[in-house]
Length: 169
Image (tube, rainbow, N blue to C red; front, side, top):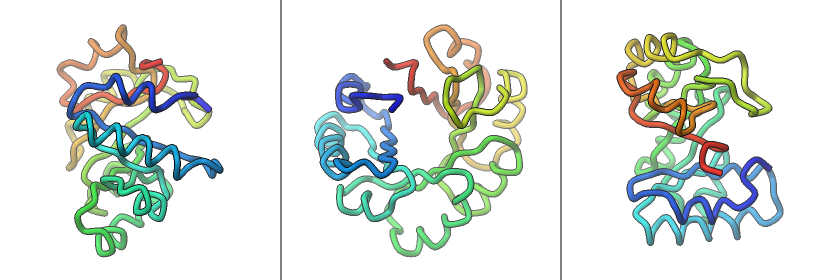
C-alpha cells in the first residue's frame, strides 16, 4: 500500500481537493471509504473511488476514477450514475482522446516525472506533458513524481491541477 493512512492525508488537504481511494479488494474497503467520505464532507473535498462503482455507491462517493483500460466504460457509467464525477487514468495521447470521447470529466495523465508507482511507465517530462495537455479535449491533471520540487515545472503547462501520492506523505 503506497498510502498507509489515507484518512490522515485527506484530513490535511485544502478545500476543493479530491481524493481517489483505490481499495484493491481490501477487506476494510467500505469502512475506509466511509471514513474518507466523512472527512470529504467535513472539509469540502471530492471523493472518487477507483474502479469500483458498487463501493462508490455504498460509500456515497462523488464518483469514480477509471483505470486506462476501463475508460470505455465511461458512457455506460454515465447512464447509470449521471450525477457522478467520472475521471480516468491516461498515459498517452490516445488515452486522453478516448477519455474525451467517453465523456469523462477529467483525466490524470502520468507519469509526468519519475515515479515509484508499480504501474509507472517512462516519464513524460514537463515539455511532453504540456504538449499533451494542450491537445486534450478535457481537463488534465498531472500525476507521477509530482511533489513540492517538481510542481513548479508545471506552472504554465495548462494542467487543471496536480495529483500526488508520495508527494503528500
